[in-house]
Amino acid sequence: MAIDELWKLYKDTKDIEYKQTLIERYVQLVKIVAGRMYNYYGGNVEYEDLIGFGIFGLIDAIDKFDINRDLKFETYAQIRIRGSIIDSLRKIDWVPRGLRKKAKEIEKAVSIIENKLGRSATIKEIADELNINEIEVESILSEISTINVLSLEETLVSKGDIYLNLSDLESPEKKFEIKELKSILKEAIEDLNEKEKIVVSLYYFEELTYKEIANILEVSESRISQLHSKAILSLRNVLTSKGIGKY
Image (cartoon, rainbow, N blue to C red; front, top):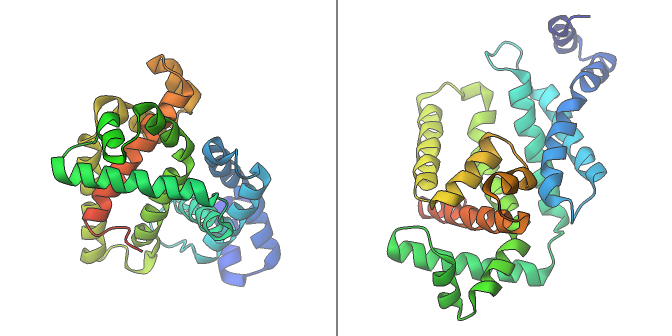
């Protein structure tokens, strides 16, 4: 059965068998999203758990998708799947308290430095602000990498609901919000140092793994983790200063 016909039959009848067939057709999307997220959450959560969290997002996407809109289901579903996984990870609170405390201390230091200097903070500046040595800062950045990624994604998924509310996606207000968010992120990325920009570009736009990026830049995976973590702290600071991501 053609996929367009299957969608129409499900939306017209809400038949559970059609829904199950759609789930089976698109379950690969869950595996793709979960597999990518497992690359940086793998030390703290099982791949099968991410799949389970993502399935809920896929089901939600199937139920809420409007087949009459000019939007690919795959695009819509991946946002829902990712959001479902992130929401589930937040609820189970898998991050040790001590690690979360370190993350907050680093984030506060980065915020103070960057708001004062108007540019990306260096490792030395963070170390001086916290009165610790640079090696300790780098070690902490590696440790808190997964927290920072999740924290930024929570912010963007929360703000990203503007992408998901299909009933008013085309309204002038929503178009403006989307444009504004993209503009803020673009400027924030431009303000990162060169290596951080490269890591962000390769990781998010080229979808390379830490290992692949490390091979390109000829550094260790740990170093890539540090650069990624530091870049995300800077991006979060910019978003927060713009009133995005305040909980």
